[in-house]
Length: 492
Image (cartoon, rainbow, N blue to C red):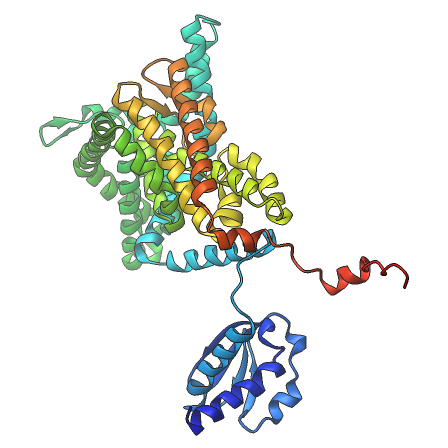
């Protein structure tokens, strides 16, 4: 080792104990002149001794603790400092639920930062448009399912027409709500977006001849409403940019509705109708021909899609399928990812018999997981552990393959609303083969996801070293030692 390297390592060795030691350092970085440290406990830093070191030119406190070493020097001291931290504090896996939760929070924050791309920001906007509609979709979907059951059983014939009206009213006007939310999300006047989107569902469009083709009320559905409202926002903004203030209140809304409405009638409704029809045809073809293979891929990839934020792109597709067919065939397959997650969590529980902290987290999160709320298990258990997240995806893949197989055999399983999964999806199930068959297929998929997720995690979710580390009993803290002192030896 050269004299210069000895000098930089000596500087790093002098710095480390004065910032609380390796155990107090959470991150190490540097800029042009400063060594930037993340610290667990700021009170452990010995400021005056640190400033007295010949190599230290000063200290700065910000979001990190910054030691000014000067240009050139900091780039050479930082690697030596990192090496000392690694030597004194070897990397250890998380042992407790709190540490796993911290890792999960860090992974969530990193994912959020990665998601700040134009495409993912657009998908987030789409989610902001459709997510507020989910409560109405769920409520109307459950009422529709109840009404269908009563009709099939021949019960309460005087009540079922009323239930049908209650269940169908929202879906008949969903384009208006999509238009309203779209304009609001994209920075326009919400009610103008709703007004333009309302053209799509107005019965009078059946009298409009657009390029030799008569339009149908509802043609284009939510996709048409989405496009019409976005167009209305841009027209409105253009008008407000050029319109004199004295005329703005009269002409801007008039031109916004007129221009956007004409484009919607003589273009968007036709295009969106074709796209909607293609989406429905493709979904049916995919499951009819791909069957188990398609279900396997969809069920296995859904958790990673959620991690990347790409699942938001599926919301308009689900809504389009519900508009067209009365249910979405994709959601029950994607819901199998949650079943794989639940099975994986149960295996983690059994494989870590001495880690009461993690087991306590699993006990509290499992009920929500059975009802389709998977985030506590994902970010609190499986994702920070690594391997169990992969094996949970395997369980979801097999569950999706099970449901996909029956779709290929002609027994489609669908959901009349988006949002719930797991056991919470049972009241929303619908299909083409009778309610009993539909429920049985979906339940079989859940059971498959549970079993495969459990088996894959139990046998392949941990290395031998992971089991040793994660089952190690944490050393008692000084507070615990004071609270529960060790017994005095006999004869003392």
